[in-house]
Image (cartoon, rainbow, N blue to C red; front, side, top):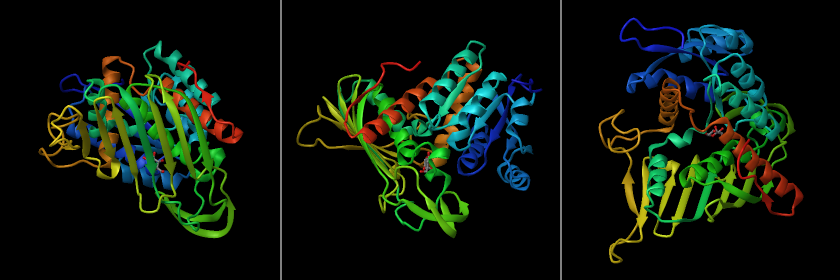
Length: 400
Ligand code: SOE
C-alpha cells in the first residue's frame, strides 16, 4: 500500500485496471462505490486503466473515473502508484498479465474463468503461491458468490439447515446468441475465450455449486454443442450486443453445455449452461436438496432465497420466500433501508469490499487462483468427456 492518508492513518490501495469494456465498467463501478457505502480499512484509488486504443482508453478513463490511461499494460504493472492489478481482459491474456503483476509484487484480481487452459491456470496458481510467500495476493472474480442470497444459501447449508447435501441442480441460462444473426464476438473465438457457454457461464455455476455446498466435484461427464457455426462479423459492439458488418466468420466454441458430476460429500449434481435459452436473460438457477430440506435461487429474482424445511408441520410446509435485504443478511445494512433490493452491480462492490478487507488483514482472499485452477480442471474434464464421447472423467482431489 502506497501512502498514509493524512486523516486517521488509512492507507491507500492504488488500483490499475487492464481492459475497460463490460467487465471493466462493472469493476470500475465497484472500486468507485465500495468506499462510499462500506467502511474500508484501506482506500482504493483508481490510478490508471490500460487499453490498446489511445483515444478509446482515455475516453474510458474519463467515463469510468480513472485518473490516468495508458496503452501498454506493462507500463501499468510497473507503476509505483499501483498496488493491485485488476485484469478485465479476454481469457487469452489473463496468464501473461496476472503472472507479470504478481512477479512485480502487485496483488491481482482476475476475471473468470481464470484462464483458457489448465496449463495457463497451473502457471497462474503457481505464481500466486510464490507471491503469497511475500504477502502478495491473488483472487479470481467469481462475483456471484457475493450476491447476498447466495451467501445466505451457503450459510444455511453450512449450518446443516438442509441436512446432508444430496442433489444439486444448477443452470445458467441466457439468450443473447439465440438469434443466428447475432454477430461474432470474442466470446465465440476459442483462441480468445478458451470455450463458449461452458467457460463463460458454466464456470460460474460450477463455482457456485461448490461454494454453496462447500464440496468439490470429484468427477464429471458432459456434452457440448454448437448450434450456429457461422455468424456475421461485427461492425460494432456494446456490451454483449453487436451490429453485423460485412461477411461472416466461424464460431469456434460451444453454444451450450450440459454436464453432471459427483460431489466430494457423496451427493450428485447436474448442470446446464447455454446462451440459447430464448426468454432467459441471466437465469442462474440453483437448487440444492438435502436430507432435511432444500434451498433454491434464481438470479432473475436475485433478492430472494427459497428455503424448504422438512421439519415444518406438514399442513403448512412449503418453500419460504426469504427477501434477502435485511440488516441481518450478508452485506445487509450497508446500502438502502431494509427491504430495498440490490442488483447485478452490487456483487462487484461486495467483491471489492471483501478483497480489500482480506488484503488489509493479510489474509488470502477467496476464490484463490487455486480455486480458479480447480474450476478450470472441471471445465477441461467436461470438454474431454464431450470430445471423447466416452463419458466419465475423474478429477484430482486438490488443486496444486
Ligand atoms: C456473458 O455471458 C456474461 O457477461 C459473462 O461473461 C459474465 O461472467 C456474466 O456475469 C454475465 O454474462
